[in-house]
Image (cartoon, rainbow, N blue to C red; front, side):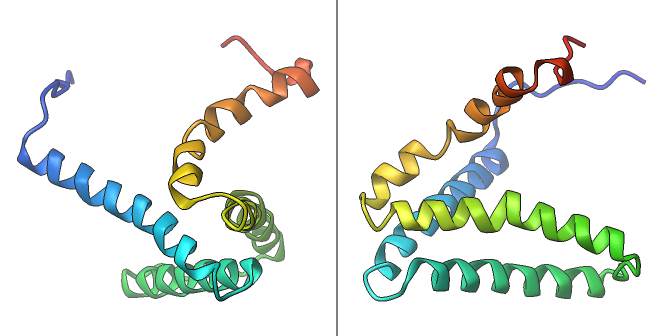
Length: 129
C-alpha cells in the first residue's frame, strides 16, 4: 500500500507548530522566572512529578494498566533519569547562569550531538546499517 507524503503545510500543521513552539519556548521562560525564587532541583521535581502524574492519569483513563514486573519498573526508572530528570536538572541549573533565551537556543543541538557520542566511546557498537 503506497502512501503519499504531504509536502505542504496547511493551517492545521501551522497551528500545531505554533502551539508546540509556545509550549517549548514557554517552558524555558517559566523556568527562567522560577529560578529566581526556587532551587533548580525543586523546579525539576515539580516539572517531572506533575508530568508523571498527568501521564499516569491519561494512561489509566485510556485503559492501560501499570506493569507488575520489577525489571520493567527498573527500566522506567533508568529511562526517567537519563531522558528527563538529569537533562532537566542540568538545563535548569544552567538557567541559573545564563538567560532563558540562550538556554532555549542551545538546547536543540543536544540530541544530534549526543547521538554521535557512541562512535567515540564504543566504536564496536555503532553500525552503518
